[in-house]
Amino acid sequence: MADRVSIKDIAKAADTTHSTVSRALRDSPLISDATRERVKRLAREMGYTPNAVAQSLQTNRTNAVGLVVTSIADPFLADVVKGVEEVAQPVGLSVFLNASHNDPNQEIQVIETFHRRRVDGILVASSRIGSNHLDRLARIDVPVVLINSEAGEDSDFLHSVTVDDQTGARQAVRHLIDRGHRRIGYLGVRNRPLSNERRRQGYLDALAEAGIEPQDDWVEIAAPAGIGRDQDVTAAEALTPSLLSAGVTAIFCFNDMVATGVLLACKHQDVRVPDACSVVGFDDIDLARYVTPSLTTVHQLKREMGSIAMQMLHDLIEGKTVQNRVLPPRFVRRESTAPPPRSDA
Image 1 (cartoon, rainbow, N blue to C red):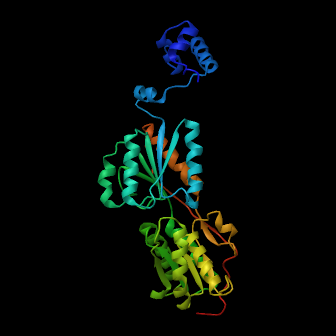
Image 2: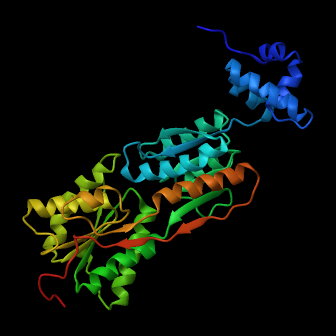
Image 3: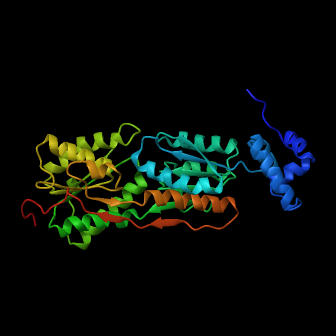
């Protein structure tokens, strides 16, 4: 294996000093354009690779950011990560990825590990951090941006990019009302309490606007047993029969994976969707287009959410001021909704 090319080697080939080469590679204005270009050309030809550790000691920057996700298998987060990388790569930032597995304690441990590794900033996707962890976050002296967050939007040291959950839910339920439904259920989740409450409130807002009094047995909140979104499917599948027994003709679901569980439960009970029951999801993950019937849902700007969050983090690293963002949802009508099978007014 060939020896690593050093700045000393380049200096010898260029017949100049170590300090001149070092300054030329850092684009120092103290070095003439001609010398800088000659040094860089030699560095390329000799296969020189900068020592990232040495550079970080000189600049107090690592040009790396940490990204905390709930699970690398989460279909929602795939597009978010794409958006993060699209902004990070052109500005020379590497992205280190780690999963928290929906555990708030593990999430804060991952964040603290990133901090010890001297990353320049941290992105946290779908955070589960509770208020009891905010004091620990406050002591982390690097910028933090939350994506699709479950906590901390009102903190003065955390920044966030989220979707307008309440408006999206209201759009979904209004669509069902416009199709003629009056008995509309909501199937939420317990392990994302902030988003769940906002979407439940949007559901209630739409019913109130239409003069519909919701019944207690129209709402079920699932408690997924595991860490993956596939657990949303299993939990929703188990609770769907009780909503159907309550006589709902449509179900608005916390997310598309919950809606997938509803579709499976309806299939097992020979309840035809959308003829006997309409189903609406939230997120518009890729799966929503391919299930049968294709899923009516609320589209989140997932890729844009990632790119905006990464741009915010880069601006914070550069010492700029940023504003929290709440992105608009967009309703997507597909095949899983239709008028109710009979008048239930």
